[in-house]
Image (cartoon, rainbow, N blue to C red; front, side, top):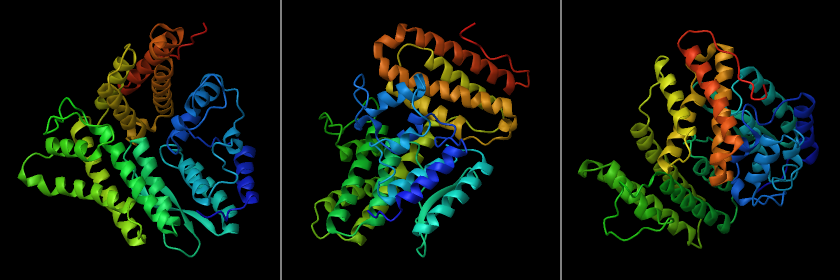
Length: 399
């Protein structure tokens, strides 16, 4: 990977964000933003009370808020001052992603500032495509063609691995680099399989227990169930062939750009195929009118206020959050209602993270009781706003 963006340029961009009091994580919590780019569970903790970066970032940025706002730029785990250009640029592009920063005015301001500094080192970020009418940016070296990135699936680990595979292909020069693309494609398909495979309905034909990394058999079972019949045979073959291609490339000593690009294209195609199937199957709520949002809020509150959540319920939580988070329906034009929605979503994510860290202790903790009260208050405000009523006041847990 290249490293042409100087530390001077990087510090200038960081200083612009800091001096302007601009949050690099936008409307997301710091840990939520970083989880879109990194596997925090595999990065070390700087706090001996926690086993990984996910734990200490949640504690210090969400629960305590005792780290400086610009801490991420100087954290050696992310190494943004001296990382490969692709890593730094990927971080910048994420700061102006529609999910992270909904304000078009802020996005335009940031992109202009970024490009003013990046131009000195031969880079810029440009619009590649759109999500719900809002631009998604990607890096481009001056004088080169645009590198187009697909719309994300919503599965964070899958999107992160695909992005990494694309970045690796973008900067690959050696056979080892091209083989790495194959390895990342294989890991991506394993992650896809783990997201969608449910042994309760996706039965394995030979009856033998399936390994959690056996993407071939898991995806075959998923496709056999979701795409039943001879009419869908080509789609099933397509998925299996893509996985076999990534395996072949991983072990091919003469791997080149063409093979790596074919493998990545096939992997992205299978990933999108699976995402389409499951979004169509599981998303029963449309964005027409206000009632679907009320139902969405009610279902989220009902699940999150319970004690234990199954994997299916966790999947459902993520889907409902994504629906509310990415909606640009006219109902959210009202500032108070939109702010209430954002607070409600933030509380949902906080509850999920606290449950993950606290385990069984979270069930009876004061933290859970307080979070549930705040969730209920936000849900009631949304219910009132979505039915045309005045929003009730915010609940103060300290009164």
